[in-house]
Length: 433
Ligand SMILES: [Mn+2]
Image (cartoon, rainbow, N blue to C red):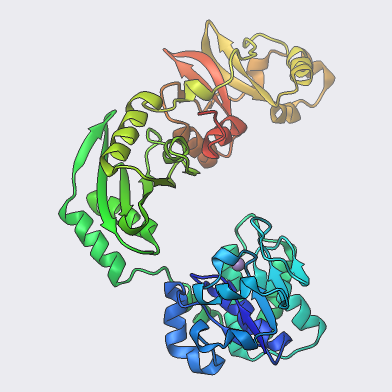
């Protein structure tokens, strides 16, 4: 007997891969772990019969000659009931997987490649063998592909994922059904937790920001807690919120943070706790800790470790090359070439009176005009920003006016210049902590 199985907390990519395996190996019996993720559970409550899926305890493991593992490569990710197969040395194992880490299942054959979704690897085979798909199979496969690649937006997505998606659409995958399958899960459990958090909500001021911490005890796996924290933060209307989830049966704590202020960088805080994220959202998992201690540590990081807010003055480039309004155009041209920049501010007595860019040289028709002073060609409508504004405000100005550099003003004088790439350093959180 051949069986095909996948990882616990089965998602759509894993389920799609199991079903695809039953097309590639028609005699293989699909075995689904007891725990599947909530979206998949909802899907199966309607579609279970169509797929003829088996539970691990319905399989007589002694009869299994071949184990096909899809979307996983590690024994610990498989269902508990499957584990006895680990001891068998006469077992043939085939693997289809797109995870490149933590492999501990030794197989006699495998297809393992870095890919956005595992189903993409299996579609390659289905295409090569000219297997026909039902619209329902195509829809399920595309759901898995979109889920694992974030609708092809995750950086892990490959060109082959996109062509697999095209293939599934040609095979009549239904995007309306897909959309309803992939909605974020906000179920009964999540609602209970959110209500409990709202009942015990506390707010505090840290560095002038409104912050809320909330600790909740939970047992077992609860999906989508980040959505709960997001909703909690919105309802409380605070600048940042931290949900500390004490997973009592596992002696660990999951911390999820959300912020929409420059002043509280969630990614930086979570990295100090051993987790990760970006300025607006992140999480960390801590073992053997007291909830109260975690809250104290976060408060300490915010108060001591983080600057109250990152300012333009921390990111800008200075000193800035500048010219005066009397500088001849030919000198400016030489300077732009020499320094490799696209424009310089025009300064008189420390005050910025204009900006001259390479683009302005298009107005120069005759060589003799290069003797003219820069004031004749400079643009006097200068968009600038104060040094104490936030990098986010600089980005907004650049986008609104479609400009790549902003002179930075402090006490009415030019203090530096901030460019798109300086702002991006902030935006993508590439600053050293
Ligand atoms: Mn996957």
